[in-house]
Length: 308
Image 1 (cartoon, one colour):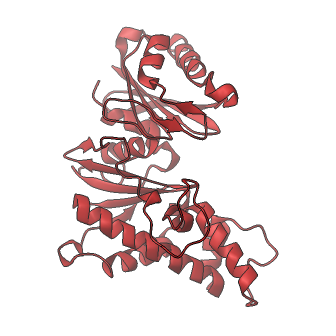
Image 2: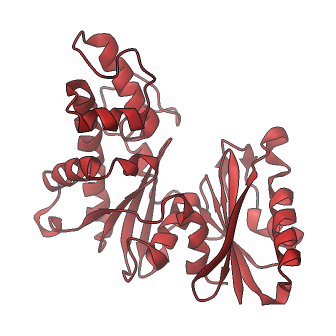
């Protein structure tokens, strides 16, 4: 039997085809056509899947199902809320893609899909419970308990990026509130902090006069740039605070950090662990915090953890 995983992003949709029990046959990307509120996204995915099946001589009866990750809230019943970077609102993605492909479809939030992938094949393989933070343009999160994703009543379980960590913040988060974790621990949040520091301080920095990116900030951290280290310390202090809250809620076997910012590696990990240990309950001091292993492929691997 075969499975298909789809990770829908704001720029591209990544698709993976798997042969059970765990072989990735092929992965590819197609553009995410966001015009007209993303009306062509699901038809494009359907056509791409149909082409793959046809080219490889695979009958639909041999496909167990399609697992789909979307960048928005998804309830336990599979209802997708507002997907801001595509334009969907209350779209039944599972029903629509099933209609187009005539295949079983399961839908999850993209961070949940990535967590399932890491649970099956990545940094949490062999575990039954985990918490995952995805640090990219925003901050996503996922909770798995007993091998199952916890979605919550409104599909918002794990949305720690919008937990308020700084009541004194004056800048507005994308969600409309102020002081959210995402404003500090995401790639865009770190860039914001760095730009503010460069404006406020006259201190020398390797980043003055350069393009500011999260990658550049962490490279400067490795070179002991004082302002970059200040940004890293602030971001990870807040992240450690929220990880402590997540662990005391779910008490998982492991915490994983994924997303583009996690490529900072040990420089990120050591700071997060220290911040976490300084703020958590004594019973959870030894909860391991590790880097995710599947990178940008975690989402498509998530289909292997779904029940069809």
